[in-house]
Image 1 (tube, rainbow, N blue to C red):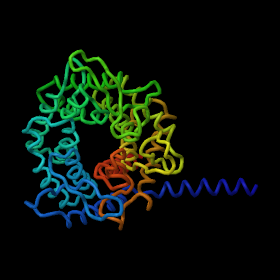
Image 2: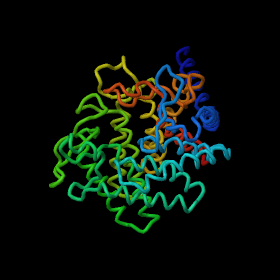
Image 3: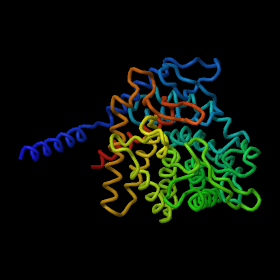
Image 4: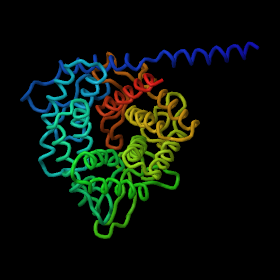
Length: 395
């Protein structure tokens, strides 16, 4: 009887904690952190001033310019904060940083990251303001991204700079997220071929980028002339055969987004398959993955809060598409727990630094941004909080 009572009390306590979680409180926390960052930013004309990351045990942001692949996440987060708080200061600051990114719509494509850079920033800005000049930049950037498409391969070239090194056309799993720019532009612009490029890239990736158990390679190399797959390798994971956490999260998010635009049931089915293998192998304690699911260093290695943030945001959306009530409930419960874990004292930056989150891992094989605060982790965490908030409003 005592055991039964204890169990019931534990379940009630767990439910109370979950029921009391307030996404708006955490959005406001992010807003306060961002305001502190704004106060500490370099002044205009003093070089690089876009926040990217804060190293472990440091307090200062590392700044980049508009060419860095992470350059759009800061203004994207500012737009989300404007949406979540209605504070006009965030709108002013977002527009300030968007201006720095505009050359990306006018220059030759450097790599595939134009979606991260422009759709996170200008995309959110247009969604919230309907500013026609923003739409113009988005459409022009989509056309630029499309120049990297190789019809023989059926994918966008991710890293033109690495073609000589690899001796092949390369496509990385991260590229799935940038398809959103193309799908949106096809729907809202004149170049409908962009839809075909995005869909073909997703179908080719689905065919070639995954092992039999639906875990993702980071990079797949293709023969540029014949389109034949050469091999799958890693760049930021532990080894070619392992499941790099953020790479799998890009797949979950990417195929969920592809279903949103295409309603192709193949993408919905595949989004669930890449999700289920991720969830099956997560640590039970907090649902925050180690940086690579198969590194032999576990448990004596770093987690990746950014992968959890990306996955949580994707699961809030994926849950709205699945038909099975059981699967829907599973995805929602996991997404909620991920966000709640990220909102705990263990993962929020709070007084440690001005970022939102701690414990993201960027590129561990080269010791880059290990156990750090990284801007894309903050961006997707905030995105997940906004989705959580909307879910509570609907219910």
